[in-house]
Length: 346
Image 1: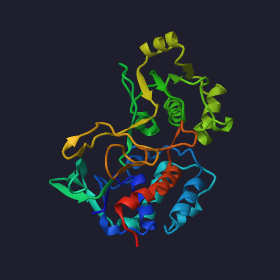
Image 2: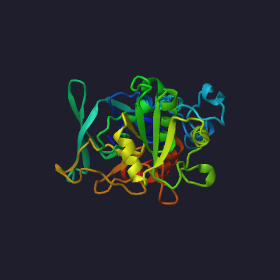
Image 3: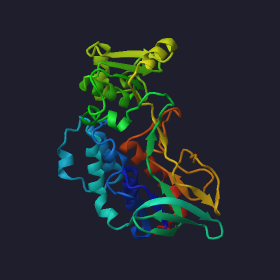
Image 4: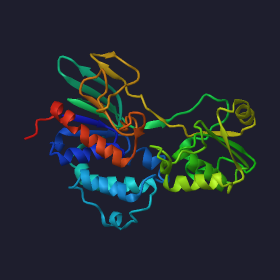
């Protein structure tokens, strides 16, 4: 096998599509995933509203994957409106399906991968439902997603994926509950609105910036926009009296509020999962993997990381770009480095 792709979420499927566009031998690719259902976006975040209009996703696929067949339903959606992320997953899955059928798919979870210096190959161990399988490949691509960051605070927490789904959230809280929300970017803003819709009595939005919300319209690179910006404007206009915004720099008030909180929600970003040990000649090098601007995993041969766990750095070299369009652009830009090591394209 030439390349093992770990993770068949949106980023993994995007990589498959891009490799197909470059004419790589698909029968020498394998992709490993326990579910093959679209990843975290479909299992945890399906009803989160995207922060970009539908046209951005559609145009990115047309630009970088011109051979992909765009279904009619996707072309009929309003181009200027954002969509729930399950719609984006549905599109990527339908576009990738003909290609994925030509790739070796292994239903299971990678438990470890060992690089053999004498062989210049990775041996990947995969736990399936009742057996364990090993395969040898020239290169690895890690596209296995990330987990929400959390803080070590002794308050019961509501998982972010629950807080972003109002139907699930209402099963957690009572109207008399007081809920603290850390973070007021895109996800945090939607959590605040969901808590209002669940009739939470007291909602505290904690922010670390100079203002409660940073807006894209004000020139902030990753500022909130579209639906999140509308909600933030409504909060600032006191449309939702149950919401109180509080800066974390106001330490005494913050501590007082947290003491009486029933729940906390962390909307403070994500961190890569590091559940797969990578070894070199059976020796573990690092427990956490660092990567450079090209997606190359440092200290490990022929290994790359892309997607939500390993996003590309923005042009300002401060922020990080996430989303289908940025994943497409970044992976497309890095394909030559993968292909030069793994493949000989005729």
